[in-house]
Length: 231
Image (cartoon, rainbow, N blue to C red; front, side):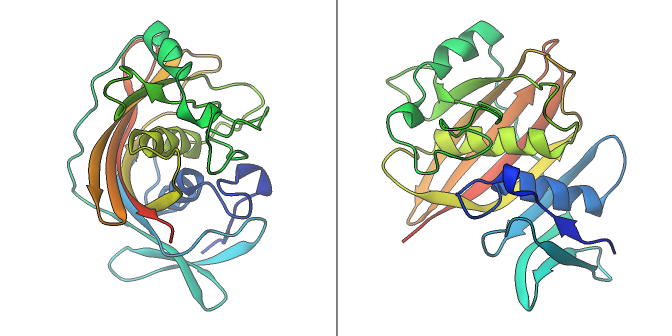
């Protein structure tokens, strides 16, 4: 199979790929077509940037991405049902984004999805819809002409919103497993919205769900994530 290379522009932490981008690009190799998923991607180690990963398919359809002898990620089509997070309108999401906790405390400020030090990223600043209930967050998501027309952008938007729904301020957690079904990246300059709900912590693991809606209310993608807090 063709290898997988993630350009350095699409980082999450400074020295590794955004988890949603990596998961989305590997997922697209599992199943082709306009809509993919649900695909479950497990990240075993930080996906490297600007390095071609060797991708292998097993008899059960699982893809594995390798960096030398190190397993970076695997992906498999699954039958998991993912509950939608209820939508909000664009204005409500924009207002929530003004409360983005990452403006004051961001563990990965150069992240392409939600980094506050990026001018060429997705600017998914998912803030709490209600300051008294910070696990329900929302953000605008507007596909721009300078961004690639790639479904992995929707995966990244779902990923970053879900991360802020678990409460990233003051702690460092990374995507461990992402199960998503993504149909579209949205039209150019479309006023899309991403909403996410944090579903709590269990030790060093946290759980979230996220949904991306188009301007007309159609579902562009839905995902659920497992996060791992770094020691």
